[in-house]
Image (tube, rainbow, N blue to C red; front, side, top):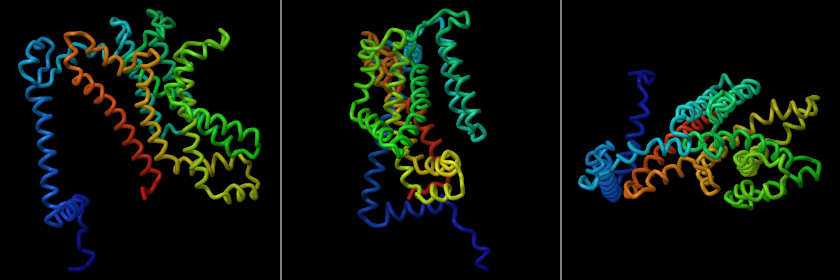
Length: 360
C-alpha cells in the first residue's frame, strides 16, 4: 500500500494512546491511576446520590428534607426569586430580568467579529447600557421608580462586571501609553496612579469611593454611590490591565516604530494600525484572566452595601426554616458563576485560536 493511502490517526485515537501510555505505562503508574479513578468515582457517586437521587426538589415537600438526608433543593424552589433579584421589588422582577438579558445580549453581540468596529461597539454598548438603566430605574419609561439602592441580584452583578470592564479597559490602555510617554511628567503621573492603586486592596478602594469620597467632594460632583464604586473598581482594573498592556508593548520590537516614522506614518497611525493589534495578541491570555477575576471580584461589593447575587444568596438562607440548607444555596450561586466564567474562558480560547497565539 502506498504511503499516501495511510489514514492518519484521529485526535481521539492519539489522545487515548497518550492516556494509556502515561497512565498505565508502568506497574506503579497503573496502580496509581486505578486508585485515583476509584477515589474520583466514589466521590462522584456520593455527590450524585446526595444531589439527585436522595434530594428533595419541591418547596411543598420541604418537610421531607431531614428524612431523606440528601440535598434540599426546596430552598431554591422557594427562594430563587430572592437569590436572582435581591431587594428589587417583587412585582417588578420582569424589569430586572429584561435588564439582565440586555447586558448579556450586549456582551454576546459585541463578541461577534462583525461588530469589531469602534463605532459599532460604541453604539451597541450605549444602547445596551441605556436599556439596562431605563428598565432598572423605570421613571423615564413611566414605570415605578427604583433607585440604585434597590438594585440587586444577578442583574446588578452583570451590570457591575460589564461596566468595570468597559471603563477599565481604555483606562488601562491609556495608563500604559502614558507610562511609555517620552514626557517625564506624564510618565511619572501614570506610574504614581498605577503603583498607588495597585498598592491598595480592592476593598479599601471601593470603601473609599463609597463612604470616604462624599466627605470631600462637592455636592454637585458627589453623584450616586453606585457610579463612584464603578469608577473606583474600573480604575483598580485599569491599573492592573495597564501592566498587562505594558508587557504587550515590550514584546513589540522598537524597530517597528522607527520603520513607521521613516516611512512618514504618523504616531497614531503606527500605534493604531501596526502596534496595537500585536499588543492585543500578546496581552490576550492575561487580559482574559483579568476579566475572569473581575467577574468573581464583583462579590466584594457586598461589603459596601450592595445586594449582589452572593449577598442575595446569603439572605435566602437567613431564616430559621432555611438556614440548614446553606450548602444548596451556595452551590446554586456557584453554578451561576461557573456558567458565566466558563463561557468567558471558552471565548478566550476561541480568540486565542483565531489570533493564532501559541500556548508555548
